[in-house]
Image 1 (cartoon, helix red, strand yellow):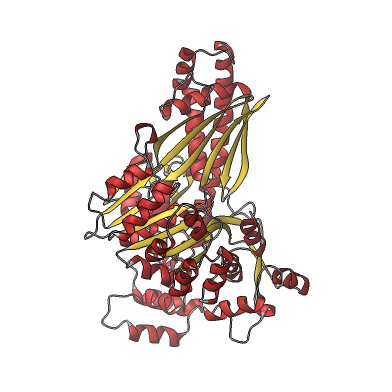
Image 2 (image 1 turned 135 degrees about the horizontal axis):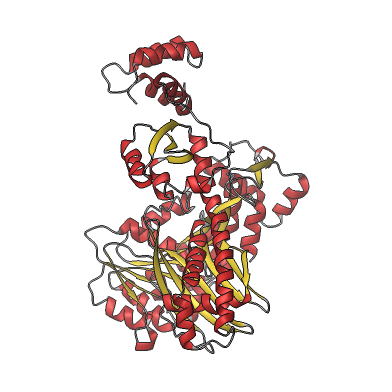
Length: 584
């Protein structure tokens, strides 16, 4: 914002927020630079951005608005689409006759103002606001949308129930189902269910017919939660609509079916993997949400750190060998693999994948979908991939002996191979591969690193600090070595050299406005096993998973539970959440 520097300096002096000495120091630092005195003081920490905005608003004569804790009218809020509001930090908060008041962090963002003016056909009155107000408004945006979606679903459900009753309730023919699937109430209710799930960042949608109702549940942050209850007679129309979207047989209700479809939600492409299953009261439908863009993730943002992070980066620089990610379904293995692919995805390498299904789409990566019904299995696809001159190969999952043998062979013949395996720990991957008839001497020649992981819920901003008492410390000592844990925390400078558990603050979730249960989103806890020469010797001797893990921890590997407690000590999650996930 263009403001007379002398006026700003005078106002700052009068406000008492900044001393004359600080102002003079800032002025000397910006001589010859294209920087304002206000920006210099913010950079030095002498002034907050919000304080500066309030001063600028006063000098320019622009009203300053505080939106925190205000209930915003959905009809006004929705005049500006959420993506525009979020990208340009502009919120519609009051409509007066032919004028619309908008709160902004930068009232000189003429592009945003012009866009809103053309969209709503009203006179735009810009108002300055602060960061906290903007965060609150954007959060209110989502909560209001959720409430609005709930109202739409109930309204359309009533129309759908009436229509289902009219055309025969449970005895609906294929022709009736086609009509139902194309009817406006059905289309609206399914669209709303999908958008509702995307807004809440759900990973799965469960639509479950019961005796007298249809229960809709969302899995959010790994926990399955009831979302809404719909009338029983809505089941046929909802299932038919989802079958049409995912190209499934409408009249086949006796056997399970699988399909997928894609929608564009606010500029973000989301794929839905659909599974239907006959149950006692009809057909249950489960949809897995897959956000197609994985760019922007880093290994650090996924939760890797310290020794494990260094080992991973070193392995990704190798041109041969194998990197495995292990863990149960839904533990984030695919996201980890694709984040690694994103790191190595440079113009001078050829990357090919064979997957079931293709969960993310990435530029410059050749992705192949497994199709067992026509003979395109992991094994057959992998045979072809090695003839496609790849540098890096990603195999979605090693499921059988044949795929394991081909993956090992590919890594032996000059390729870097990434894949997943279902085991409970990193060390457990080695006996699992040996069970698949992989020869120990081939395994030690190819296996570079094994990652095991789970996802834990992260604490939201509302959280309560506490310190472990003697009883809690004794309980924790039953699952990990307290001395070793202190050493790990000291090594990464989370605590001081002389600090003990009495000085480490832990946190409990506190339900608040930003989260109903005190948690928001998830992060990985990992163990990263590097196949060192000593580990290779143990493999050749036929050592157990326990012996391999013991050796790896002595060489610096942090176990999954230790990584969880490490993140709890950082205030990222809670001890209870770590124990819940690791014991599952």
